[in-house]
Structures are given as structure tokens and as C-alpha cells.
Image (cartoon, rainbow, N blue to C red; front, side):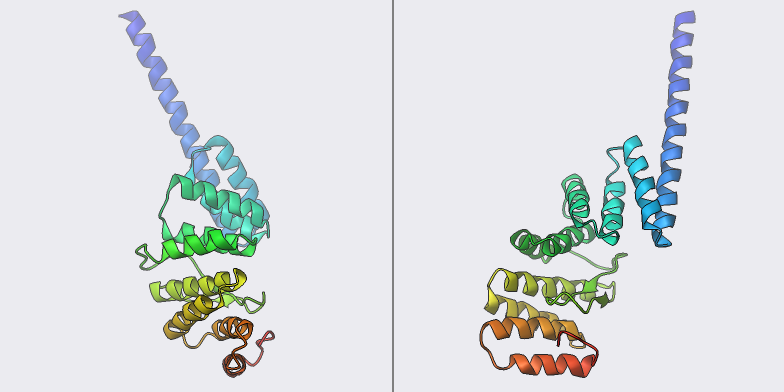
Length: 222
């Protein structure tokens, strides 16, 4: 009976320590979130590293660290973290988009294209992530809406750019046609379509550059 009491006491003690450790990790992760939101990315990275040392199976910490590393221009590190998260939690639209966009930026165009195509098959409504429209020239990045239509337009824009990089210029134009249909006021989309058209020796490319400048006179690549 005494032995059973000791074992029970040990179990209670171990459970209490486990709960205390879990609480400490949650606090570290919360502090990391606050640091990220204040754009203190170095502090956020340090805290997320510590969080993952304590809880290497914490999927959300990998996602957060990937976003933090992307802000710090550590694209290879971000790619690794987003990959880990997507292996742990596949088919999460926000995370899959993060992976696909990083793949594009580091030159993995085929992988990016495949993940973007997969994204179009997944349901995505309101999202907490902020997506960016991107110019294939490497300039003209700015925020877009976080609603589903905004997300879809940005996916289509990335698809067009990936196809252009892969030398598939006609599909690129088609994807960018669709992006422009959803968001006709985005100058970068016209620049990207103009570049694909230019590769096809389509003289209407100049009309796309002119339209981009009408929408944004400061669009340098246009």
C-alpha cells in the first residue's frame, strides 16, 4: 500500500512538472508572437528556437519560425521550416502558399508550380495571412487583401510567374489573364503578363506595361 502511494505521488509530481514545462513553452511562444508583431524578428527567432528546443514537435512554431526567417531574408531556412510544417500538417492553404512562394523565390519553379496548382484545389475562405502581389522583375511588392479572392488572384499571379520561369509562356499568359480578371487594378499583374507576352513576341505586351503605368505611375519595371 505504501509502495502504491509512493508511485502515485511520483506520478502526480511528474505530471505537475510536465504541466509547468508546457506552460513555460507556451509563454515563450507567446513572447515570440509579440516580438514578431512588433517586427523584432531577431528576438522572435531566438524565442522560437528555444520553443522548438523544448517542443520539437510543435508544428505551429515551425510555421512561425518560417515566417520569421522569411522576414530576415533567410529564404533557405524559411523553406526548411515551411516544409517541416507541411509534412506535419498537409493541405493547410496558408502554409502551403508560404511554401510555394518561398520555392519560387529560391528558384524551385517546378515545385512552386505544383504546390500552387494543388492550392487551387483546396478550400480557402477568410485567411489571417497577408499575401503579396509580386512582379516577375523582382520589384513592386505590396500588400493585398486577405480575403479568398485576394488569395486566389495572388496564387494565379505566382502561377503565371512560375510558368514564365519554366519557359511555358502561353500558360503563363492564361494564368495572368485569370489573375487580372479577379483583380484588374493590380499593376504588377500587367507587368508579369507583359513579360510573358514579350517572350512570345506578342506586341500587345506594351499595352500591358502602359496599363500598369496608368494604375501605378511609379511602377519602375513597367
